[in-house]
Length: 472
Ligand SMILES: Cc1cc2nc3c(=O)[nH]c(=O)nc-3n(C[C@H](O)[C@H](O)[C@H](O)COP(=O)(O)OP(=O)(O)OC[C@H]3O[C@@H](n4cnc5c(N)ncnc54)[C@H](O)[C@@H]3O)c2cc1C
Image (cartoon, rainbow, N blue to C red; front, side):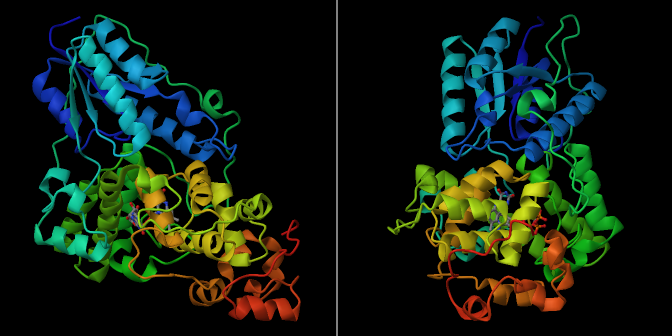
């Protein structure tokens, strides 16, 4: 093996543009071995008895890796593929190939930190150095105007403090060439999707869009949303939509796996503002990315409290653990069309709009009173864009145990339906039996009695048991 070989351990940073660990490694090493290690724990079942990584995300992950492998090959290298616990396999492989340093991106939550700490200890014990980088956010951790333990608990305070710092840092350049040792062969075969999760998920033609993983697809989506359709120019007015591909950016799955850098989006917004238009919509996409930053920094600050039932605001509440109601919620069989349509979209496609997520989370936690962590865990399995910080942070927020400064935030589902799906197009899209009900009537299930309807229209809680919707 040539002198000064480094290993780049890839995690949720599956790209070559704006990549701090890749840039750092190339500055210091003569040869670089990019490695991805499939961690069996990511494909095991959760406490709910469902896979931690559901079919849509697993498929998206494989596509991201295939795309990255093609890109690395075009740059003279390859993607090495390992299987097993990364904290064991990666240092073992580094020693085997004589690598002097392991470069990687830092994560912020407990399971991931434990893996990286153990990996570092094992690497150091073998005399191998490690270099880790913060890189998943717009703002850098070390550039924040406060130490992380003083991160404001209210988003608006955080955002204003950040905005005072001025522009986001420039992106790091994409390397043209990645020097890779040629005289040796390495394991570079990606596992088949079926081997990871069993039968692949079926495509549903009702899906908002066909999400395909990979940095190149992410950049195509960026170009489509900004330049081809100019949808960015009206983002603020469309972002609460429920149906279709372009009411929101749909960047989230690529952001979650790091196939798209948030700084890339930021600098493309700036270009759009110079070349096309600058308005409240162009600002609002940046604003939403700051929310994403906020949850990541909050997870760093609060550690394990992010996953505890009391949440970061330490609320003691009695939560229901009614498994049968939870099951009705997961399957989209609650009898409330707006909830069921959203849950069926999630199950059929891996995606749900932001409005939908807020409503189903509010319904589960406030109307059914079920433990918010069950909902978060179900989302973890099903979402194609699952991001540990955004998911658990948002769930806590909606459940009233997180960062929301407003006490008792509650979504009245029928009022929300009236506002965001007044013609019933969304619910009829996912619940075909409602097709015969015109307009807003589609939100009032035909199976309800008048008395039930009255309760559902006005009340703060929904009657039990729920209607039989097994044929919806
Ligand atoms: C209960 C609940 C769970 C959620 N779980 C996740 C998750 O696991 N992964 C995830 O990426 N987002 C999550 N979100 C946030 C949000 O719903 C999604 O980011 C958004 O719907 C993705 O679609 P989009 O890319 O078209 O969003 P856009 O509206 O186009 O927003 C652009 C980007 O801004 C960020 N963003 C937007 N809204 C939020 C938000 N509320 N919190 C954090 N970041 C945001 C995302 O990165 C998003 O891709 C959750 C929201 C709720 C209410």
